[in-house]
Image 1 (tube, rainbow, N blue to C red):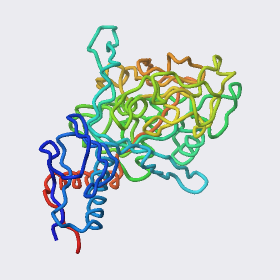
Image 2: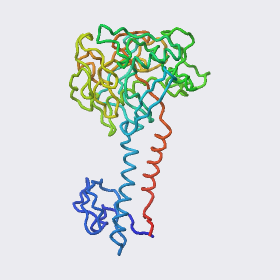
Image 3: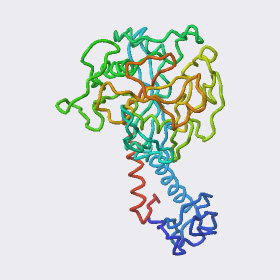
Length: 399
């Protein structure tokens, strides 16, 4: 039974559906035949008007279904954020088993943060371009927390990786749950490769020698999974180090598309804390005073749901400092600041470049992962709902 059809608000249709129509927005206040949702809906949008003689209870039900379908589409297509889904992946076995929590970073086709664009220079100090960061065309998952010492120790035991860690006994202690620091980019890449190969996936990075801190070899177009846009990473890998855009979007972006200066979803620096689930772990001056916090207790979350991308430990990005990713020995980007940093280091505009073999006591990393099939299914389902809503001029319900 057809009980309602869409009305064009700009043409004055909809009966008592709305009051206070303007060119900017329409506030639905209800009425005898109105939905009474209280939602604000953009002008030039389509609302509902009841078929003459419609039973009021049936009208209320179709209004509810109509708005819920559109709300679902908005959540899935526009606001599907990391906080909506946490994924836990398990690695190793027995006493060497460990897990990593990931959050889904949605909103594909995110544009870069042009307001905080900065000049990019090559290894010789020559200007290359003005670059903005955060533009990512796909859904992906990022580690909610920094990788911990316990996770490295267990991966070392399970995979004979030989990754070394900084001795933090004079800087707050070597707690198993603090961030794993003193790890080079090369060692972080070997850890990521272990995550992949231990589950039967393609290694992300091409190591042709066995030393734990030996450099990678660039993938070539003769090799399966070669990506000309990023020769560092094999496109068939499941786990990887986040590149600068993937890291930046999760740190300084938000589900509504707004970028911020700091990872707390604000342009004002977070409060300095030693640990906890608010503020950020920084401002300690000497690392011996501040120390590192446990990775799950290292400050508040970003709008996308990650912890400690600002403060606690500095973090490696996959990307070369000039963004080319075509030279194995080139310096890599490091971002986020550490426990001994000032707010300057936590600022979105600040980064440093370090040799991939560098090891520092306050330098760690986190891991990224391709989207789970469930994330893609939800995204596609949202698209189907939205497109169905755009095509349909009439609404059917059961008698």
